[in-house]
Image (cartoon, rainbow, N blue to C red):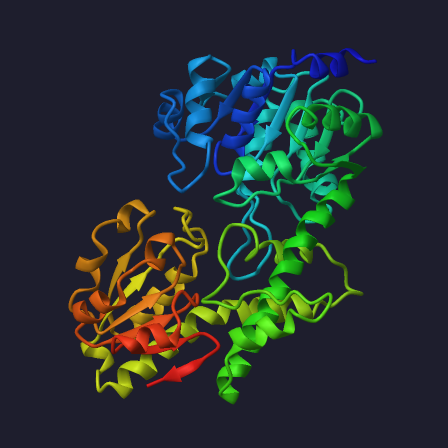
Length: 441
């Protein structure tokens, strides 16, 4: 047994987490709770100060995270800093930074990853295990991570330091539960690197830890999110089909899923978040000339179009009610990309709001979880010509539809997440339109 493995198994290894966002912060907290001394690095002084006071900068509904953060900060097992010098004494460094794609080219934008690797390289010590948790395009470990770290540090990967990748499998609202409960794929540049990484994650992960090479791990993560994107695109296209034919996609979906081995996804107002809108592009980013992807770009196009479809539903309803676009005032309810979350990354609501502004519509926004859009929902909808529900926040599911009808200037409800039924809306005099059900006027 190597010294490094013994330190990991005995929780004597010093851990540094680069990036304290939706992935890095809960990971750092859980390793600290497990008994490791953890330093977290984040570039924002304000967020570092918050964390060191035991206050979570993540404001969504994250069961257990705020309490866990207070606990591990109070015990001194987790300390946040902006200084990369803490990496000098690290036995393990985890990198969990954003890896977006360029909106135009759809190619990876690795500014944060390159910055983290360059800064780490200046303080990397021999024998350190470096693990990339960020989602990256297949081939990135070999083509970017390894050479950049070697160049910045002057050390040789697989000889003077270990290199692995263990892509996260988390979603807002379930961060701690996902880290503990989900199976993980652990990619190692060498079998020894994979063995060390598996030993480390055994302190957190209750699911299976599958040891593979780095390329396989990169493929698994990007492919699983591309799979989900394609499945959602199918559901959305079927919703549009049902609208065109005058059917109810929600009834059709329920009956389709009664057939064995069918699991049709939920259609809706669009796909957001940090992962699904960009991971399919990461999957195909480094493909060669002999492969021309068709399904993945088509699925992305379908899902990207859904916020525009919501706006079209609203326009049809406004026109049928005799309301001109230039005179319309619309309430957009829900600005996060996911229910009961404050995460607005790639939110379909952003796209819908921008489109409405282009059309000259006056838009007011409400979201009970996003700080800049909190407030009284009834004040928001008062005097509006339509209420457009973009997110199925728990707060919205119990709204009094009669009170909504009274508050609106024009009684229009556009349901992008099937929160309500047409019977519920029409019973109180609301004009109702929903994804997959056409426009009922």
